[in-house]
Image (cartoon, rainbow, N blue to C red; front, side):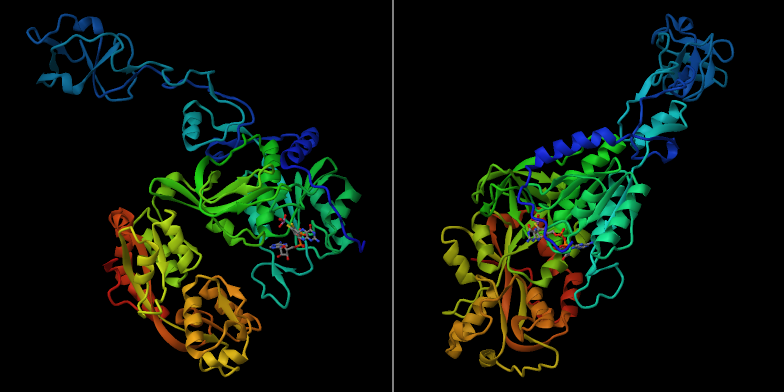
Length: 635
Ligand SMILES: Nc1nc2c(c(=O)[nH]1)N[C@H]1C(S)=C(S)[C@@H](COP(=O)(O)OP(=O)(O)OC[C@H]3O[C@@H](n4cnc5c(N)ncnc54)[C@H](O)[C@@H]3O)O[C@H]1N2
Ligand code: MOO
């Protein structure tokens, strides 16, 4: 079996879905089961449900008051109030009480003039049936309460019970077998050894299966061995309605999934024009759908939504539910290939009334991009992408309301942005902070294009030695700008614990392996400044070209790889348990257009900055100063 799968042909997404759907429909049969109405929330009705009882079950008073015979009230007026006697003319009723012959109308208590215990006067006649809910007003026995294919909601449960139904026929939950494969995989919770990977996908699949109304059945991890995978698939197919085999879907020498599925059944598709998610396998084994999903989490998720969910809907009878789509302005150029339909995760924010989509990292292994995403921009296979500023359709993964109350920050990274994102919804319910880390300079450019509310920045003006203001003046010559004072922070060289390479100053970078930050990052500007002061040229630094996107990513390189030093902030070094050699202090502030200072959520942001909770977190992290925090500097 030591051969590679070369699947050069990739089928367009819709074609693959249609072909598979046609084939699967032949073998999927919907099973029904009866469940107590009380336990039916979220289940799908297998057939229409009809009421067995009327509601109300009898003619019922709709108000507190008295019941009368309407004819008896004729002639009552303000000039000629009519006197009624208890027992003879009326009976007292409460809301919901039955109203029977000879009574046929109810008068509200507030419309009665009390004379004594047993006597009232009325000043208007009433018509028959007033304030009476007639039998079957809401539900008539035999009436259809819910159609088939309907997802049962709390209000439906109320109506079913009211209509005399205690048990309801729903579609049975499909059992979905999940087989994680890979010799390098370990279950979550086990200490990973060299080269081992935590099986995080199975947990995600199990949750997705539950979300879409199925019952997950996760097998133990199967190593990359043809016979073992074959046995696992056989077992899972026998025990379940459908099966997912995870990883080993592509062209590696140990990617056995497709060979196993060919041996056991029919592989209809291997390779779809979708990115991420290309190596998906759509097969049928023993009349049951079996889908091979790629190992990379983002690919696996996109393929699950695209191919597994529709099959589950065949079993559950649920109507396909799609995310709402809205038009957004894309903040960066998005290049895509005609070879596939591409799903680009985006952060969304509303700035100056426009919905702005900022693309997140596109790697298929970047699972956090799924967590951080507010939506996804789907670039059709017939498109080569979009230019910055172009309108693009975006599937929303969060509500429009939530997006509207989100402060969009684009710029330099600091851990205080995480503290603030965590604190804000606590201090100002409903307000969120979304921060994208692209470096100080790129953040200011995004602010200029109207894609962000604030841009965190720490840029040193070499001539004046002053942070931030000079850049704002230069980049926004004709706009009224301001800086919200943030923190001062200690910058330094992060080195391995115990400083084995004995690094004491910038000059020592000449004899070690360094990791830099991306172009336009304030930390890189500071390094360049310090190198210049020492008369060192960038090309003399080994690793000047190696770029980390954040302080923490730079610290992780020092901690886990052959890198000896990276410039960063004290808090990152401390968080990663690294040693730290101080090189200077800098100012990390928030650039903003002055007109936006009045936005309610910007006031919330400033309040959060000045809160005792925030100061406490910053003190705990260490390496920060908070003098003047939250003050406004006009630029
Ligand atoms: N020569 C080629 N190599 C690859 C191609 C190709 O066309 N030619 N396709 C690439 C694409 S696209 C994808 S997507 C991946 C799919 O990989 P596999 O499905 O074969 O998965 P593995 O190689 O076994 O694993 C890859 C990677 O996925 C992660 N993984 C796997 N299982 C799990 C799990 N249960 N939980 C969490 N993460 C998991 C892990 O990082 C693995 O290293 O192939 C490319 N290669
Ligand atoms: O299809 Mo893979 O998912 O592009 O990375």
